[in-house]
Image 1 (spheres, helix red, strand yellow):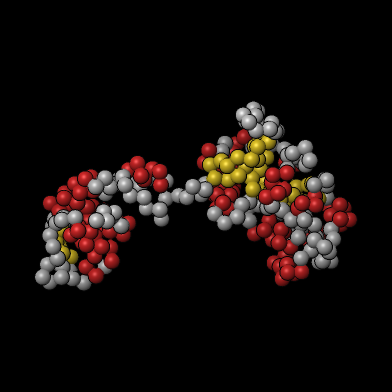
Image 2: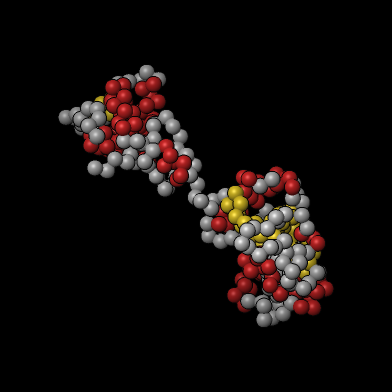
Length: 290
């Protein structure tokens, strides 16, 4: 016999519990009310467990304090979470509360975890010693006050290369928290972090491709700055090979840009751009987006 109490039925049972505790009982539901999915599912579950009063001849249903007591005792017997206990945020926590997993509620394993590049005071056993390590960190555990700014990196290969001997960390990013922008589910955690970061009033920086798509990402986000090559280097090195024709439709999105970005947009309008990966040996600057 399937013993799990569906979330819909559980929520209806909690509402019934609250009403009975306020002294509204016994409760009688009409045949029309019993057509509601949550109430119908709760009645079916109770009937399967031998709880309470069967459906009335009218098609209605009666639920009393005694029915509620039976329901609560049955939940305890089946090792299901009590009605008055909030579900834990994680699946691990919910399975400590009872046998129900309910995958659809709570947070996912990576909902608050971002891939950070962090300085290391000590090296890890069996791993080659490095100055920085890429580590998944729960955003709620980060001590944001310890960082001068937050930089979100668009491309994974640049994220892993930045801060290595091959690509030393640019001076403009010293003491910054560096995270990978992510994709799919992992990008959601970065959005949580960006929202929390805004309250620090410290720089929130985007580092991505210097093309139409990269500039649009920077302008559409909460970012205060963008990492770009110096204008002179960008003008000299931007090229047509790294400018994708499919991005031309984004020109309208950059019709209005901050004054600081306008000289870069002029180069993009020449159908020239520069990939983030091509900036390894360049002098990088923080360009304000306000």
